[in-house]
Length: 289
Image (spheres, helix red, strand yellow):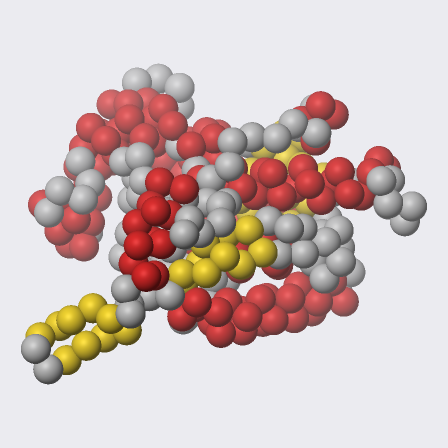
């Protein structure tokens, strides 16, 4: 998913999830928000939108056209690479600053990880969809639920079997450590030094720090202890999407166990049981009326 300002994971905004669905529903009941005595602006309209896999999100209906357009665009992009005979993968990686990170830094790590995975597999043989780079240019202000409604449709495919993809790559601690050149020795101290250098060299990053959007301790602890899909709302949903697709494939005559989508975490294939284990939901949830 691309988000504006405080974007998150793989192109998603900090997830609203079930925590704010009540507030979203309350907003939806208000027809207008008064700006002054003479001007009114229509309030966001939140609706429950479900996909082929019957996964539902509470989305802002204002983004429906942008979502539909990007789903069509990305499907065509995938088709172009599939026509070249490439294996198609999806990168699940946190983009949101939730937890102490930086959207800008996470976007850089997403691009670096996509490049690294592609190099490992071979650019002539594989293409990895990086949601941070392919979220479209009309999703500024969208929520995590809006982004996940979009990515779920792309991942599940027209038949709900993930037929456009060959593998999922879930980013883990090793992927983040590689970006920061961590060595396993005094890693938290290295992250503090990295933070100080970034503040000195990047005015936008410094502004965010000065405004309290990023703190040195939060940054250090996030990237040193938690940077992984394990702490991402959207990635949790994407794990469950991969599991559900593979469950459907195992029961489909044209697929079966031998033709499940491959799933990798932190550079390694998951165990057989990992293909069948769900995780806690992130942004999934119907609107609460």
